[in-house]
Length: 318
Ligand code: NCD
Image (cartoon, rainbow, N blue to C red; front, side, top):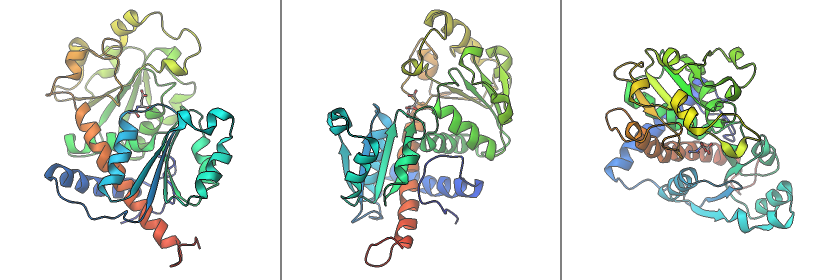
């Protein structure tokens, strides 16, 4: 088993064998979660603080549940009501928290790079729960586990990522992870929502859904990230759905057994037709949520092991 990281800041620094280590452990947690097995209190005596400077439903809930299931003391900082609103800087907040000696810090922040910066100021293991449009590593890992369980493998698959690539940290982390595991990645979307220079990442770029979806194994839809747009990137939501929204007609171009994914929150009738999202024969959207808890348990378990190994018996960092 190999996992050498002190923090989980992104997919970029991970070796493929580290990705496999997380997924293998998460796989067994997913099975245990289904069987309702009582978990070993791997994180007993450890304190996990969740700091979400940006709204979140499933990510925060699943980190909280993951910590609870492993026996950690979990605290959610109410960042909306906190001293950030009174003008405190990120670093001062970090130092304040650090003085409370947390072991695991789960951070979501609207600025790319903020979580990385924070990790340099604290003694805890830091998990990036999404920073701006940069990375969202646990989302890419849960997507990978969902694909591996549905398709029986995580290599040599043809995977389409569709929609608002430019503003999406989910897309960035997935492009890196699926690329490291040697899959063929196709990006589909309007040129206004495609980051410049993206073809250098070893992906194929398409403007047209019919062309891009042809014979793919996996169709991953993305939300239009309106909160990160400062102007008109699309003519109208109606027009966008017509050209890029996934419906039964467009899905026909993919392989007959292609699975449909979405990280949530979904905008039905904008990037995805509600009937496709609810089709239990094609959509694995609920499985993604389920795998999210297992992946976060695995990531925190592995980081806690490294944290313990790095500490002297008296709890001080070596
Ligand atoms: C994503 C996020 O916050 O980056 N959601 C999530 O974590 N499940 C995607 C999104 O907001 O569209």
